[in-house]
Each structure stands twice: as C-alpha cells, then as structure tokens.
Length: 88
Image (tube, rainbow, N blue to C red; front, top):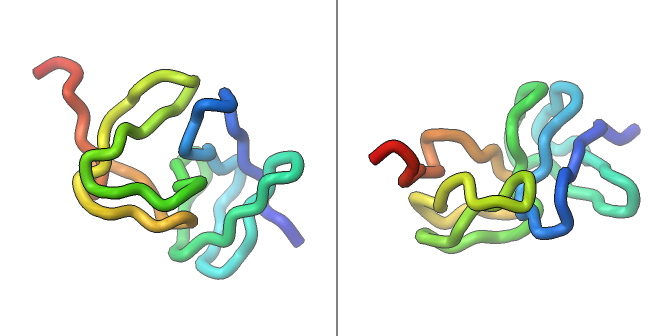
C-alpha cells in the first residue's frame, strides 16, 4: 500500500506527505514513488532526489531554503537539515 504525497510544482525537489509515513513505506504522487528512509509525519517534506550540501530546496516551484548537509532521496526535510535565508 502506498502513502499519499503531493508535489505542487514540477520544479519541486520535495514532496509533502498527506499522511504519516513509516520508514520503508513508499510514498506516491501520480507515477512518482519515493521510499521513506525514516518516519515522516503528515504535512512534512520528503526528498524526491539526492541533494548535496548547499543545494537549493524547491517547494511550490520556489526556493524555500538550502540543504545544510547531504540529503538522500526519501529523507525527511525539516529545519535540522535545511536552512533558510529569508528574514536574515
């Protein structure tokens, strides 16, 4: 069984979970599948591809931050591994 996620813009490199997802479960949006590497809660972001430290994170087709470290496809993306330049 697949867990639902949403990809808002084709430029996005993160998906947004529409339900809680446990490590090892597959999150799906249309024909895109991503296996979660860790437990991720509803409403949080999952990496759609591998990212290197410093890479830009896109959601809504817009830059929302940058990777603070290497992030693997399927990893949870939040303020522990993503920085933001807005408001600074």
